[in-house]
Image 1 (tube, helix red, strand yellow):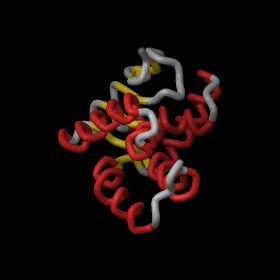
Image 2: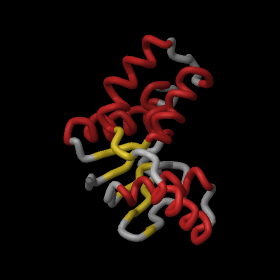
Image 3: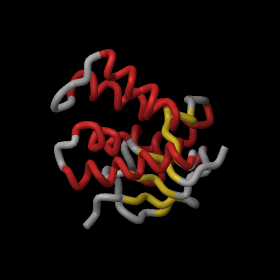
Length: 141
């Protein structure tokens, strides 16, 4: 498996909540392109985080039917990385080496395991390189 980019949870939240119009538009473009070109992915962790927030913590939470529809049409087509022993070992090594939180380290490990060159997130240092992966904040002005 090898795709160009990994999309972190925050982009999905901006897309669906539509509170910040500029960020919502940028996130929507990245997500739609990823689905259309099949050149983006997410992990089980992003699916879980996203659904948890959208069902319970969102500005306007989704009802179960809306959440299922979003899962089927947006998250599921991008979901490629499943948990495994190597992913957790790599996450622990990334955390030790780069001092990211454990969960951010798992996102980076998932990105690397999918062969991604770009990790779209606003939660980590813009333009930081980890192996062949570059962290990119698409909302940076």
